[in-house]
Each structure stands twice: as C-alpha cells, then as structure tokens.
Length: 100
Image (cartoon, rainbow, N blue to C red):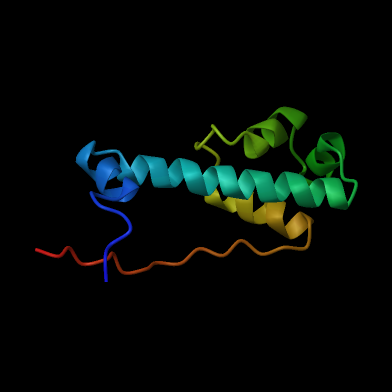
C-alpha cells in the first residue's frame, strides 16, 4: 500500500524548531478560552457577570478568554469552568515513541 503522505509531521517540525511544548500550551489555552466563550454565549453570561460570579475584575475575565494569554493560572481556569457548570479535565499521556 502506498503512503499518501511523505515527509515529517507538523509535530516533528515543531520539535525540530524546539517549540513543540510552547505551541501545545498555546493550543490548549486557545481551545479552553474558545470553549469558555462559547458556553458563556449559550448561557447568555456577559464578561461583567462572569467577573461578578468569579469575584474578580472584568479585565481578569478578558485575560481568561484571551487565547494568546497563557499566564492564567490553572485554578482560575477551573473556577471559571465551574461557574458555567463545566469541569476542566487535564491528563497526562505517554509521548509517542520515536521510530529510531
């Protein structure tokens, strides 16, 4: 059977550039921020209301929802998820073994 794709994967490229972990972190933050924003829209929760419920500022909510801001602490993300009746799930997975 012929291979459809030849060459390395995008993940291999990121590793070669030594930015795989950083890129993964940004991707995770971007996904969580998007999910939070979508649920807030569905539940008609404004940033101001979310800030009130989290007992924080609207500026902090903007940081939580900013996909580029990776400095938001994990406990803050967990609290934000709980406010919208969600649970933040993080797990460790084995890295794929290299075919060396």
